[in-house]
Image 1 (tube, rainbow, N blue to C red):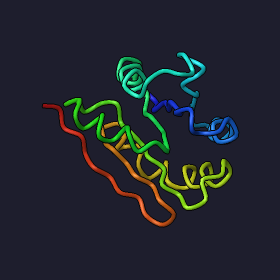
Image 2: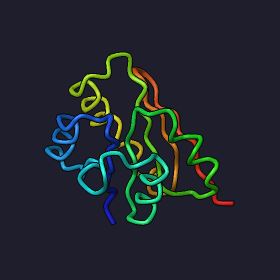
Image 3: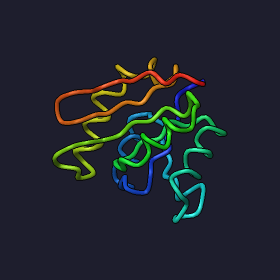
Length: 123
């Protein structure tokens, strides 16, 4: 199954469109659930429907770690210029290199120059 991405509300529709144009199936969370859905609700939805979450929200990592699950995989963007075009360009640059780790269950942090991967383990 191909990796599918669920973009948190803090990712612009411009970023989502750019990813889709490049062949990365991406949908904003507000297209599938209430715009005010909690981070926990988004995590649960992504786990149930096999999405990888992309966010700029730092709250997702601790919630995911505390959940005890190895899914969903999570990408947290930590860019100095978080405009939609820069976020999209950095994702398009990095995604081909991390797909296998996302499929295996991981938390990935992408900043301006580095990509850090932590494998998630289920308890």
